[in-house]
Image: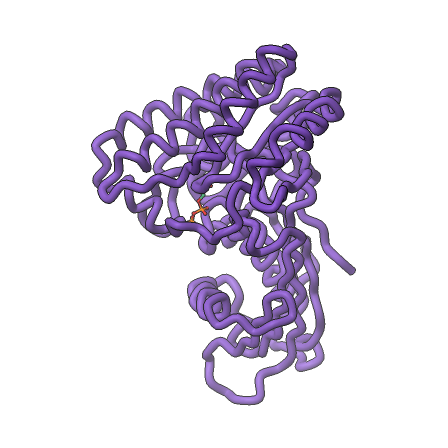
Length: 352
Ligand code: DP6
């Protein structure tokens, strides 16, 4: 379709959240395809907001033309990663050959909080780019979220799960027909209402950026002696998790979520080379949390990503007592008493 130069200028802005995996994606192959299916809760307050101003390019080459700012400042590392990504997704977005992009991205959480931001960042970017393509090509059909999820996956695997409210599953799983390795699917209707009330208090044990990049982390699975056992176990855990999520069995969800977190770190401990991402304060918090749970008989559980910070998950009705405990007993083990009080959320929103 011929493009009117007027269509080639405008602004779009999307806000997209991070997510926390209950069954972990660890190990990938091909072009960002997962070795096992994973499921996550979509978060609410930990998000990236990406604003893109676009206008016709002044030169006629077909290269990416981009100026990227993170939190109002140029950032060479991020700029390079985004250029690489835009080159990769050029086939989905032919307009990228004709427009110059000014991207401004901000996170709701401090960059130095040790929170992985690639899920929120690439989901917000994929949504914004899809919106631009829609506008510049003059189509008026709405954006197909599955396609956007697939495009986000090409930037960061876990980003494809941030596209949907409440909960999302990514990766082919035989008992769910619509599941695929290409994109995530929404799981909101398959999960009991109680989990909509769930909080995720993220205790920041360290604010340092990741010791092991995601790509290096996933590659540790390539020759891992326990790889096949892990992929089989993840599938078994996923089926148990889905059953428990469906009926609102909080205890089983919590038990499985903790097992997954520990398995992820156990895999890293015996990878070649090995990595210890847990810190003494991570273990201290986990130990105290388990004691608190058994003394108070409160359903409160933890999970971890590939780092030392502890995600504490619990139902809304226990929020007051758990948060009091976090503040009085656990924050002393956090870096400068930092924590992010997040909860399950409704997915990305377009900012007009
Ligand atoms: C431990 O999605 O960050 O958080 O695809 O290389 O960008 P890339 O990896 P990434 O890996 C996330 C790993 C995890 C588990 C999970 O979120 O499922």
